[in-house]
Image 1 (cartoon, rainbow, N blue to C red):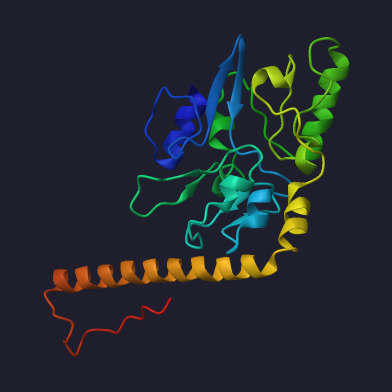
Image 2 (cartoon, rainbow, N blue to C red; image 1 turned 90 degrees about the vertical axis):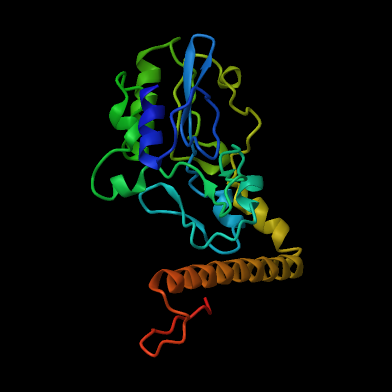
Length: 247
């Protein structure tokens, strides 16, 4: 799959024949009968993953992508539990684990380029553009080709709308899509629940932030000690610059 390979190259992941989202696979193409269905982050208009993240490691950009800042992540994995599409994955076997997911090639979008999977698709099965324009084009296709497409654009209304949307010729449920998703954005439910348990949330966030600080401090100390060994110094040299491990 050209799109899978392009995504793997972009992230530095290995090329595999496993077509399931994982910590080393941010875009896959799955086969359902005679239909091929790409899977990736849905980039919700009001993302549940961002709403539950206690440190703001995930956020929705003005351009559409939901991006992840690994430097802020404390590994709580709330985002994995909150996502209605089970997209975020965790690097369980990594000594310094992070969450992985498609970011719609945000760094490419910022310089006027298309996402890697869209750019490389030989069949132009993936189209990139403004959300309203894509919905308009999809509705036009549906009207001009009666009986060819399902009379619905998946992602237009699901969980408040998404930036990744689908047009298909057979029922979405038969392609592995959930058919019971609400039209209301999930963060509204999230905050309704969290507002009733503020103390637990605050204390839980404080505790996890403490764990993250301690782990990060240990890593900085280890890096600093390794640097001293490389420089052949025991750390007492007067010309050695001080380094702050307080963050």
